[in-house]
Image (tube, rainbow, N blue to C red; front, side):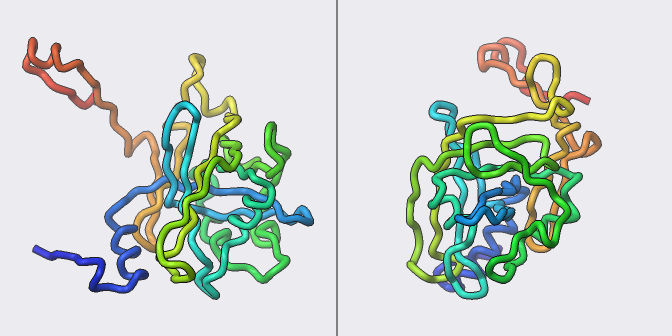
Length: 224
């Protein structure tokens, strides 16, 4: 048995271990814009749904690896008080790591990826045309965590209120559900691995009430 004590390792080593075991993680490809309108795209996999009303999501925004300063995404979101989470899907996989690069100041990811920013419905930040689902968010609350200024420790936990979800009809069913096979979201694994949800890798499982389980002696079963 291996016991990993995070206090006996550096913040980088501890976060690396966490990233390897908490996987796969959905990737929020967040789009924002600077004060001059410079478009920014950046992937964040420390991202989760929180609650249905208010409709909240949370994203952990750490510091830049190069200088331990705040990331442009965080600065832009705080200035505008909004941001857009574009769901990262299989068609976007070749450009995920390109958008994770730390570019020189005054440089947009549009200079390294051929993506298309489009006007959002309810927020000032742009959305990404190449993603079939956009979560338009307003900053709801920010929680400061970790040791200030320490890489892989200090994070801004940004809680966003989703004020609008824009979905491409190609990934929706007639009863307004998302077809997971057609959506084909990408998941982040431990570096440098990713995974994708394709119909071949997915399975269904029924859910039964406890009373039915007691009466029949049958629990959930996978649907083949």
